[in-house]
Picture 1 (cartoon, protein in one colour):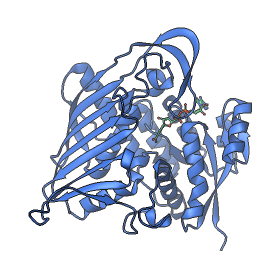
Picture 2 (cartoon, protein in one colour):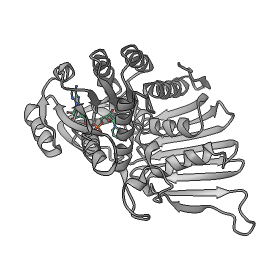
Picture 3 (cartoon, rainbow, N blue to C red):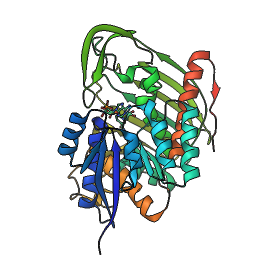
Length: 388
Ligand SMILES: NC(=O)c1ccc[n+]([C@@H]2O[C@H](COP(=O)([O-])OP(=O)(O)OC[C@H]3O[C@@H](n4cnc5c(N)ncnc54)[C@H](O)[C@@H]3O)[C@@H](O)[C@H]2O)c1
């Protein structure tokens, strides 16, 4: 039987553009799915650059105005992989045109924008997702299964660090990620938002928190992102950094668990150390993105003398998603988290069943980001708005 084709229109084509393009191409290759995503059109502002990117990544056509992409009748899905200040306008326009939407994280620049995006997708009854890809690592999905099967019992602690170091050099330029009007916040929204998503996925809602933020390098030379986390400095001119370089906060979950969170881009030697530990009454788990196939598990009921963390290589058929790839022990990587997320998104469209994380998850995540900023400013505990 012919597979159902879903035509994708993507806006933006650098770091995340590459991750999403690759994922769409691999879905029908590895997964036995009735759906085939078609890389129909890629939008960018610079004609020569967008044409070059389309050719490299295998897109059929290009547009130099994202509004034109959204108007096209041959497009079913709008995929937004542009900086954060563009997400709301693009997603609301896409929803009004009846397109299904996947948006990169954080969902928006502000909580108000995020709510408006959620209302638009609800009103227009389109399928929506926000790209918190790390929850789609098979080891994290397996951790979720252990929690749901009550293998860890009541959860006491969730402890997350997201550590990077790519902006430590003071000559690293003032790219969009360091400007509040474009990114909303710094380490908090860029990487802390991922830890918040993992926390909400595994433990539940964050009810209140207290936090602090710091900006270590306050001025930088002007410049632009140049693919991945690289950047190019364009001018011998300096501008002010208007976001946090680092953030830490303490949180209380609705189920009584305590959370501690740290996100920084100044943790020298840590390139993408997204890790967490969770402690429950019957056991503990810990995970680290830099060794993403591995899950450390400790179970209180293990035999005395043999107690301790065991390390599981989550590449067995029992572990979510990995059966689609290679034999056990033949590990997978970063790009596979996007394949799994976008696979769920496409399944959601064909089955008309809303997948997660949805825009509502994006709004609740944004409410935590806002509360952290309010707490850092007021130097007080802040209640997190429980939306929806
Ligand atoms: N899920 C993840 O792990 C992850 C990782 C990195 C980035 N992100 C998110 O993905 C988004 C994009 O980040 P990136 O690292 O790919 O950025 P990037 O700077 O590498 O690429 C941004 C792209 O958007 C285009 N663009 C910028 N402004 C535009 C506009 N006004 N109209 C049309 N196109 C525009 C640029 O030309 C470029 O193609 C951000 O929201 C970021 O937070 C998510």
